[in-house]
Length: 352
Image (cartoon, rainbow, N blue to C red; front, side):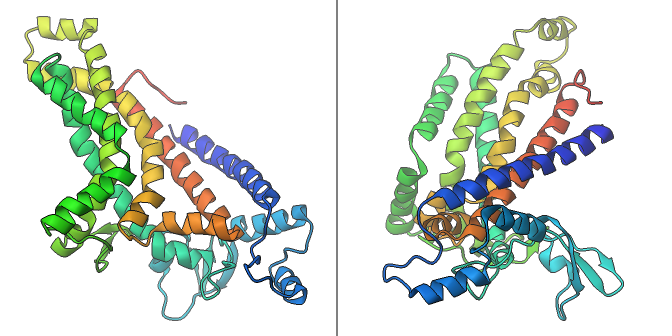
C-alpha cells in the first residue's frame, strides 16, 4: 500500500505538469490580454506592465519561469508576526533554523495589485471549503439513507417518494432552487439571512467552522441548495447498487445462516454497495470544495468560484493557473483517498 501511494503521488506531479502546460498555452491563445481596457491604455504603459510581469518574453520562457516560481521551493526568512500555521492551506512550511520553506508560490494577481494569488486563496479558499464540506455532508446525510430506504422498500411508497425527491434534485439546478429557498425562508418566513456568509468563526483544521448558531444560519440555505443535487445522485447510485448486491449469492447464504436482517444489510450488503458511491465522492468533493460560482453568486458568498470566473474575464493568468492547479491537487488527492477506501470496503481489492 505504501509503495502504491508513493507512485500515485509521483504521478500527481506528472498530471500537474501536463495540466499546467495545457492550461498555460490555451490561456495565452485566447484573444485579449490582462491589460486590455474599455479605454485603451497608452502603448508605453502596456509595454512597461508586460515587462514587469515578463509577458514580453517568449511563451516557452514564460512557462519555464512559471514552473520555477510555482514548483521550485524558495527559502526566505520567517516574516515577523506570522506563524508557520498561517499558510498551511497553500504553503508547506518547514522550519530550518530561522528559515521557512514555501511551496507553490502562484505569483502576483494582475488585477488585485495589493494581493498575491496566495493571498486570494488564503482568504477565499476557506470559505469555499466550508461551503463545499457542508454541502457534501448534506448530500451524504440525505442521499445515502434515502437510497437505502428506496432499495429495501422497492416498489413501495418509500421508494416512489425517495426517487421523486432524487429526480427533483437532479432536475432543478441551483440557479432555480437557490432563489426559491431565498424567497421562502429569507423573504417570506424571514428565518434565515438572504445573503452573505456571516462573521467567520474560528476554524478547525483551517476551514471547518466551530459550532456557531449565527454562522450556520448563514450557511444553511447555500449548503442545502448546493448539496441537494449531489444528494439526488448519491441516492440513485445507492439504490441501484444495493438492489444489485442484495440479490447476490453471498447475501442469500448470510440469510440462510440465520443472521438478522439488520446484520445482513449493514455488514454484508451495504459496504459493497457503497463502492460506486465512494467513486463519485472524489470528484464531487473536489468540485464542491474549490467553489461553485452560481451558488456563491446567488447567496453573495465571497468564495473562490466568483474569483475564478472573474479572472477568466479579466485574463488574470496567475489566478486562472493557480485555481486550476489547486483543483487538480484536490481531485488527485481525493481520488487517491477513494482508492484507499476501496480496499477497506472490499477486502478482495489489494494494491501493490
